[in-house]
Length: 196
Image (cartoon, rainbow, N blue to C red; front, side, top):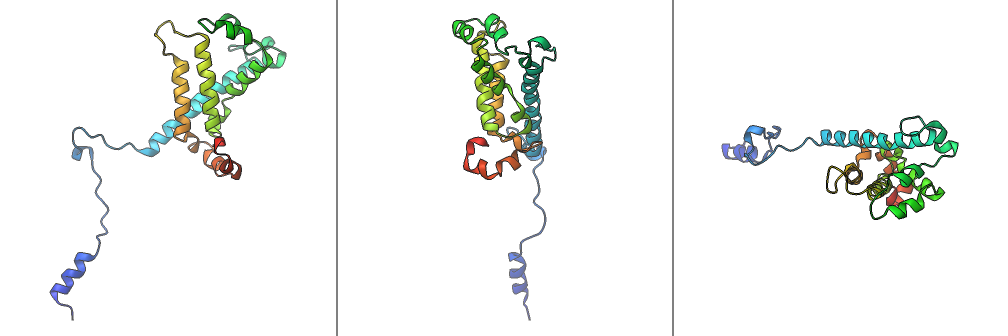
């Protein structure tokens, strides 16, 4: 027969099944913020990835097919126009102007520009590391072609986008509302992590 002491010992060692109490804003010290909801943060990054991917993809499509937004159909890439010639010939300034003028309209420059511009990788969430490297490089070159913005000593949207593209790769933004998880589980991607 169990004694009262035995019963007390047994109940003391049994863990309670009550759920842990969560801290509310009222219980947090004044200097401490409540933790962010990671699922919400992940979806904000996903929306940012898709939005920025669309910016790149639309520019690629417009320059390829000449939808008339920034490129007329008769000067589109498929009609023999150069995606780089107009901007690099007429819009560049600063210390690298001569270098950009020299490459304007060259086939290799057109292809590199269009490959980097193809933001479909960002939109789908695959190859985020390559997309970040090529996108950030393209954006920094675009900044260097016309440095020192009129309304700011050095910062403009090209630099902000470049930082954002790198951030998207660092937080694995392709895993949410994209095919990043599937892509990263492929054997080839495991063998070559640069493809993540």
